[in-house]
Length: 553
Ligand SMILES: *[C@@H]1O[C@H](CO)[C@@H](O)[C@H](O)[C@H]1NC(C)=O
Ligand SMILES: *[C@@H]1O[C@H](CO)[C@@H](O)[C@H](O)[C@H]1NC(C)=O
Ligand SMILES: *[C@@H]1O[C@H](CO)[C@@H](O)[C@H](O)[C@H]1NC(C)=O
Ligand SMILES: *[C@@H]1O[C@H](CO)[C@@H](O)[C@H](O)[C@H]1NC(C)=O
Ligand SMILES: *[C@@H]1O[C@H](CO)[C@@H](O)[C@H](O)[C@H]1NC(C)=O
Image (cartoon, rainbow, N blue to C red; front, side):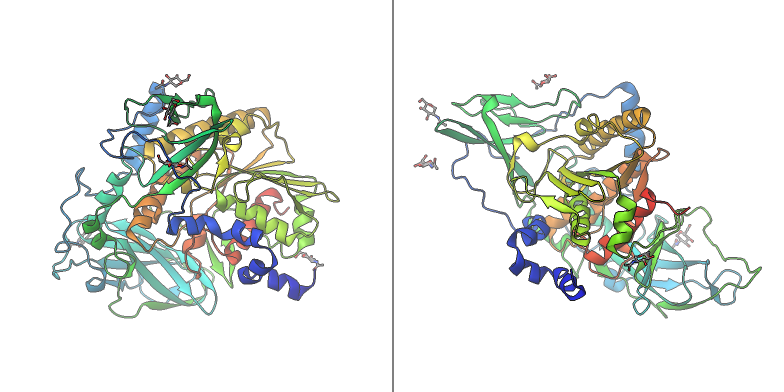
């Protein structure tokens, strides 16, 4: 393929004309978050209003040891100052980013800022009445960047619980570094986010279509359903114990279920909207009092780095000239052309499981490698599964969606496979790479559902590594996304993602698995956040993945 041609291919607009399939493949999951699709059905038999009067959900059974772990995990994500019942909506005492300020603190020990130093920014919050805040709990995203150098690094925020916060940055490059502090949510909005899917799934209705002969019916499904007069079909997975139920169609049996789909609801009360208003309460930059940038000089021999907060973990990596470098021990190599990529993947089997953010990696590889052909398996467009094969180099890549609950179009129930069950069917070995990315579709479920899901996946990973310790297991973390509306922020925003992401990292910590830190890779990058990160970010992620598969000698 010519260079110009490849350039064209990178543009979604040209793709639209070239192949509607590829375009849809890439973009529609996101569109589905923005507007409620009209499902291809007219009559649904539901005996109660979805979601109403539903008491808390029963979750899958856990052993005492697992309950202990769950309690530790829940403690680890506890958010400061969040009452169990949200306060009435009022802006008065709410954190107001526009009236708050941040200031770069002087370098400890004085002198010029040096590469390798830690820079601290003090954030002081005020409310809409102009009064200083005296409690913590605001949710920030912070980064340090230099647009001209295409450089960026994520900052860590420390909550002092008294209305002030520290944002701590590592200074990885020489030259100008600009501080950016964004209030994503005021602390007052967090109880609403917590209660949104705290006890039971919220915001999305799942349905199944049943069919036998000329009879069809559609009923409501979920991990738990309110008990009504209508009997329920129990689709609990016998191996993982993952729960799933549908109301039984009146005149059809439970085994006539053929399709799964979803519909997004607007479940929040309108008066809450003011707490989730972009540019007012949500996603607002904190102005800097004084300069918002520093100039960083190279470190001379023998000079010590200035550090104010020694306990704060450093960032996972940073961008410089658009390229991601890791700070956690792995040298990220550049696989800058097709032959470098296929050389690394030669004789490899790459098995990807998860949501569409993992599927993007298969799409990227198949676009980069002309010899890697995606087979048409006549599956539903975006749901997959997908298989790509490079016959010459003996490269086999697959993607399979992670199973219920999932919001990718209409899917045949036969293709809803839990990741843990798939992993149990893999022999593994030194030529096998397993990629797992499960987060985006679980944000509207109670955190306990996510913990159970990752527990069952982790058990399968432990078994796989026991039978084939050379298997490379790569975990893709959650990424930031653009959630400009109240419903998107509550359903699938960065705060619910962060909570699940912390759980994911903690649960796989210390295991023989490799992380791709999609969170920091999207936070540090200059491109707008997107559920499906844009191509320059995917390219860097693939460099990280390939560096794990083919480490430099
Ligand atoms: C839906 O129900 C209405 C009335 O109950 C009926 O007239 C209509 O034919 C049904 N549509 C389908 C597609 O079953
Ligand atoms: C808040 O706590 C931090 C850390 O303990 C302290 O440095 C700061 O002075 C406190 N600020 C106020 C306004 O109390
Ligand atoms: C659903 O089926 C599972 C597995 O057979 C069983 O353990 C569980 O008790 C059933 N749940 C309900 C509510 O019937
Ligand atoms: C089920 O069958 C009965 C008897 O034929 C009929 O009255 C009823 O309307 C049917 N229900 C549905 C949902 O199709
Ligand atoms: C591809 O990239 C590798 C590694 O960067 C380089 O050694 C090689 O010369 C490149 N090949 C082509 C055809 O550009």
